[in-house]
Image (tube, rainbow, N blue to C red; front, side, top):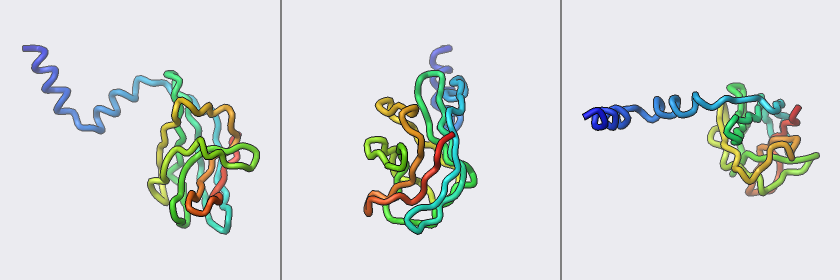
Length: 133
């Protein structure tokens, strides 16, 4: 009977509550941060943080103040010394404004990079770059 009640309770949790329960147990450390500047005649602003979690995973968090003026096919990824690294593509930019979180694949070592890019895949140009400190 207890098992049935536990399963029923687990199934009744909303996705948000479940995510909060599962992610709150993971400790996080800000490994690096920076502020976007626009590129290729685009306006890109706001703070970005690279977060390392105790489980070995990493996240890229665009701050509440993030903003991009618009472009076709904007992506989020890493770069080093002024060059975007296509293999670090974290996915399509979800919104032109506001806080966003992108999971870094285990195959990408965030310590190997010193920039976060907003990259236009269609035209192969940077839309914004944040040097990481």
